[in-house]
Image: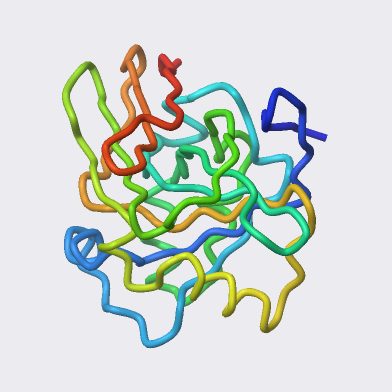
Length: 203
């Protein structure tokens, strides 16, 4: 089983639950419709990786996200995550009305920073993604259509969030293709104070 780091320990997430189309400007940049219901999809443990890849059968796109690690039904930790996407395949699947798993749940499609304990005001969390020292994505809870507690309430209406599970809360505008050699720096901030960051070089 793949692991993430939390509180200087290895944790094995059973699943990664992802929220799609949660930032209006990101919906617009991909020419999607604003959803009536929260968009949910799941990545398995096998999707978790420490390696940022630029290809997996086709070029991959990055989506930086605020992520939460669950314990005892509550948010225990926060981290930065990259939801990697086969965009060409996803577009085909959407046109055909088919599920997204082939484009979202492949091996290596979920890349995370360490998670750190968090018990502050969720509304004051923001993310930042720099690529090659240029800020490409930034956004936060205040811009979400479905904020974290609403996400959890909706998920728990039909799914058990087990200890170690991760919830990815969607991405702001600025997504794009990963190029080999690109240097990524993902950061989570709380009221402008850095909580956690992680660097990757795409291969």
